[in-house]
Image 1 (cartoon, helix red, strand yellow):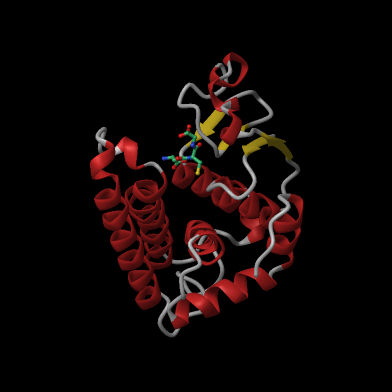
Image 2 (image 1 turned 135 degrees about the vertical axis):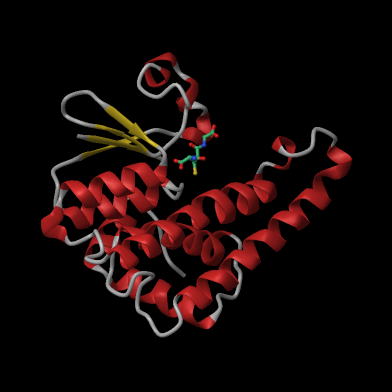
Length: 207
Ligand SMILES: N[C@@H](CCC(=O)N[C@@H](CS)C(=O)NCC(=O)O)C(=O)O
């Protein structure tokens, strides 16, 4: 199977999960910063023009971070990426959805793509400020969700991949001070061999 990814983009989380799963996969670099997502050959694979995009060996394509993360966890049970209990599964889905749909799409996107939220340039500073507010509120939620736990569902699971990439953005791109439980989670993630391997493969450095 193939993972279409851009170094340091949200696809980082799925790249980590694939590495953790032990599955055979080929990382396919798609440079969204140069507009490769809009080229006909990629649009034919994913008409949403987004990474992460997973193409299975039978040609079927899975899009949307939460769906791909769930599929990996369910498909490679030996990697124990699916929490064992329903409560744990709900926690993993809760953290994934909040990180992707709110912290990333509502917070981070407002800071980096204000034009998607307000056509008039005069409004962009206010949009960016609101994005930072939402992003910071998201990190505060994550901090509480990690209270007394190493990972969002207790043991490491698919639910840690999205919190990881937003934390990576918080620390390395936004240079924010991480709340204590999030900082400990980030350090724990960076110490995992699969994360080290993927960070190196994507050419990413954690300060
Ligand atoms: N809802 C999508 C969001 C994916 C997304 O926004 N990916 C960004 C990279 S972090 C992207 O591909 N952007 C390209 C573009 O918007 O042109 C998901 O869950 O996978």
